[in-house]
Image (cartoon, rainbow, N blue to C red; front, side, top):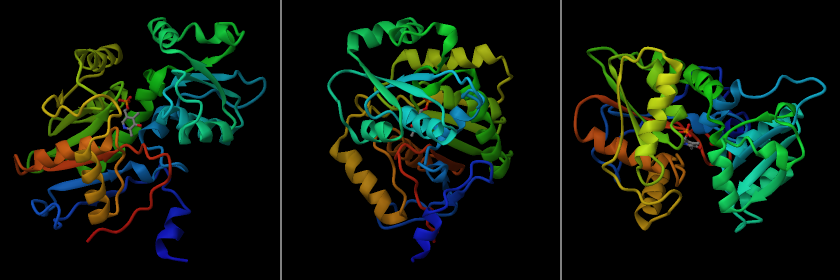
Length: 316
Ligand SMILES: *Cc1c(COP(=O)(O)O)cnc(C)c1O
């Protein structure tokens, strides 16, 4: 059995020190080197490489025991959140229902794996989905014949205060390992869907950190507002500078382009690290632009999204 396979069989535990790797110069990326670009391997965390979703769920599930309320949540036909949730519930033997956005897909690799993990699936057409989102999903229990208090309801992306609490623990461990100070500042790059993960990092970052959020889809002011609202709700002091990257128009959410496809395959070939097409490939691209601009350390937070565990390979 090869070395990699041995490692892959044992995914990295989320409470051990974060795996942070240097991305060296290579034929496709000659501008790198000198410890300027680093990557935090969240894609190696958890049995399915859940990355940030692992931490968002850490404080977001009912305590085991009977009777256990059914867990209900919602997402798209490729939802990383539902995927991580199905894994977590199957491990803990919790009953779980997933509402899928749109009627276009009865089967995707994600949907098939939700099925096999025991999640009960229900489809909502786009009109109903939007209406439920506007009511903050409060109508979902009723669709299954439950009263709201009889269920454990998680919003889209699992994004709520408990999710931010879990993400903060991950962010703390990463920032402790990087030790940003005046002589050695860092810029962290993170994918932003609902913005909850980014908010968790913003709270934990000191004045020598910058946090750059990279929108998964076309930038909208709603995302800026969403992050600002989470920050205001929690009321913790903020020391760092943060912003959402609006310079790279990556197209609509989930849209694949030739450029992204080539970038993902170059990165994989040079470094043995897979980037997902929705979030982390755009994050890596913006981080590379950052490296070209100053002498700080630039750090890609790989938030997972591949729905399979990655094998950490040794770079250099
Ligand atoms: C869900 C997800 C994000 C975005 O997380 P939010 O907290 O919704 O902003 C980023 N990267 C990956 C891989 C994800 O699955």
